[in-house]
Image: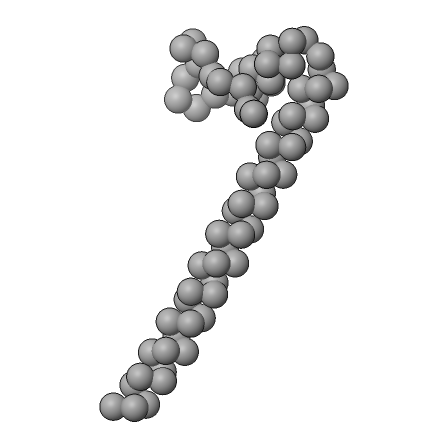
Length: 73
């Protein structure tokens, strides 16, 4: 679970603020903090890839359907 930003952080946190939040969440254990950062980054990357693939499939299906339906008319 990613650390929650404190009230002191701005809308766009800096690298230092993010690192500090993860380190705090890991109770000062730098090794655990870096593993959590990597795990969260990989999770976000996988989700972005999943959304991209889904969007591409929807676009392809819409294109094919559009051609098919216009050929029928």
